[in-house]
Amino acid sequence: MTVRPALLIATRSAGKLRELGPMLRAGGFEPLTLDDLGLAPAPEEDSVEAFETFEENALAKARYYLERAKSLDARAPALVLADDSGLEVLALGGAPGVRSKRWSGSALEGQALDDANNAKLVAALRGVADRSARYVCVAAIASLRGEVRARGECGGMILDAPRGANGFGYDPFFYSEELQKTFGEATRAEKEAVSHRARAVAALLDAFRSGK
Image (cartoon, rainbow, N blue to C red):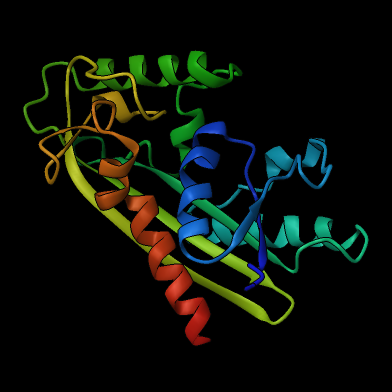
């Protein structure tokens, strides 16, 4: 029986875990969460994503959690995957971008935070004709043998009102050009076929296996 290599997912986002777990299993890895390893939240976690690009933030998270995992016993995985992703709206000069998660400035979490961010987005685009936007994701793997990263994107537009209750973040307001529906209306499989995160992870795993 083939043993799947363990890969730690460096996120505390329930939405990201729901999406990344099946992607990694399909890619031949056994995903582990921070909770699986008993890595409790630490105050410095909030300051890890302090950079101005998705690439820098993804690598910073992967490096940080690799170091924390190395402090555990020999069962800790030697591979850590992190991603940084966000929404870029053309009319807003690329905002919210790397600030997507905390764009509203709120200290809320979960659905309440998503609601606050989406309310700010709708207000910022009120009366704006061009609603063009894209989701961007950079995924990175840090390991004892080195680092690799890859980028994925998907295009669409921002709606005035939400559609669908699936996904998370800005998904109910993001109308996918390829799916002809919002990510909030899409099933997990439909979203995975075109999403920024799925594209970044697929390219990342290919690059990792090829040793690039």
